[in-house]
Length: 78
Image (cartoon, rainbow, N blue to C red):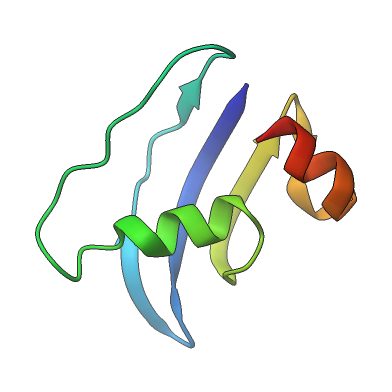
């Protein structure tokens, strides 16, 4: 399961994407990201893979904060 909690992502202090709600995707399910250019779709994917700074909020994979998961375990989980 991937869970996003009150997430703000972007570059520096420039927020690209913000969601004040929690979003979860259960194992085996698919999510589609749809939006215009520059709305943060790729930035969100980079944040989930921990390659993009999170301004605010947390990302969990299998109920563990991504900052506490090794790159190897993260790649196996995603």
